[in-house]
Image 1 (tube, rainbow, N blue to C red):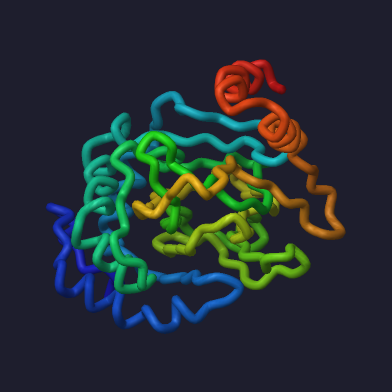
Image 2: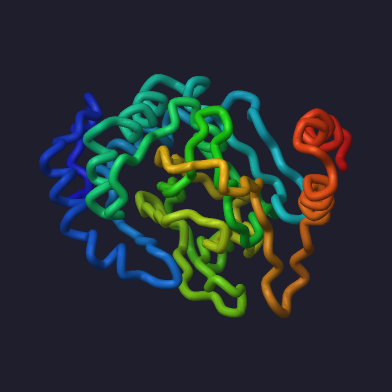
Length: 277
């Protein structure tokens, strides 16, 4: 029985049942430490994700692709450029019935889905790739919203722990891994986001047949941002006792933001980042 009752043909969600499912897991989710997070197997009807896998066997050119020490061989694909069934699934996961499930689960009222899917979509990490432990950007500047919640739904058939790419939760002072989840097919991992909600998939993807690690990623916001807050981009943290590297590009940008007037900083930072600063 899937967590989210959904018609595999129309993708319609039973709103009442979705709300009840969120309420059923809310207390456990909200009590998790160091910050609220959850993991749900058999999240959607299996036929839904089977259809998605068939559609995305061939993907368009990626909008973004990362190949640097902190984000290696990771690419993403916006829903609007994907085949119709997969595209519509993303739209349904931004709809009121699914948002009500999320609100009941998290206890966060007024969650707002992102119609632009900034940073979201289908994520692919190729063999040899990884995503180091990090905290996500906290401010959607286009919508002036505060980021509050991440949803990851995995698409990897018969994936084993030794293939790498497990999703990890770390404590707030980055001294200890708290939890880890193998990214198996139809597993959903979700968590509240903040400036110290450290997470990632830092272990290198190493599938014996060269298969990539794939997931659906969606982010949700609230209208709680105000001028007293300081926005930041993705913040990476090296794991203790590893060869993880400090993100020197972000450290340089933070230093510039401290010493330059805001108007000048906004004018130069984009240009500098395009040059690899």
